[in-house]
Image (cartoon, rainbow, N blue to C red; front, top):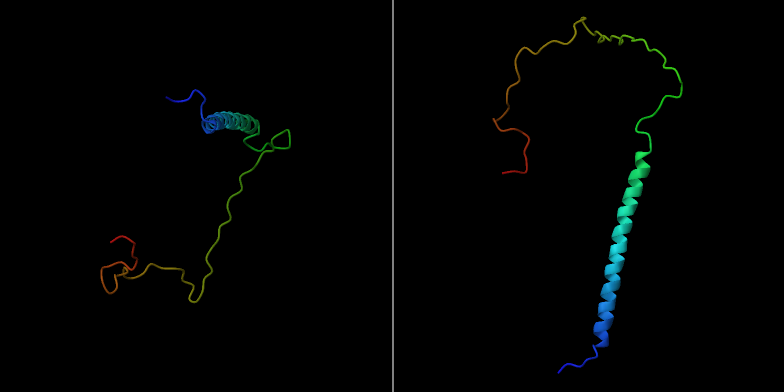
Length: 100
């Protein structure tokens, strides 16, 4: 027949498990509270920068500058090739992937 006094090791183990469970609960609650606090603080910051002057200044559209390629030699610019490029050596691409 088992004795009525529990083993002191069992009592200590159960007490430790209760402490760990309580600490885990407080840690989870603290994490939720910290997350909520961070969300409130970060939601108060402005999403965009604001202008420093109180009245908007009108802007005028300026056309983009046009550039021309420098002409060299006989004064001709770039021209299209006379024939389309062809595959060299074989029809297999020079690039390979890791797949088989």
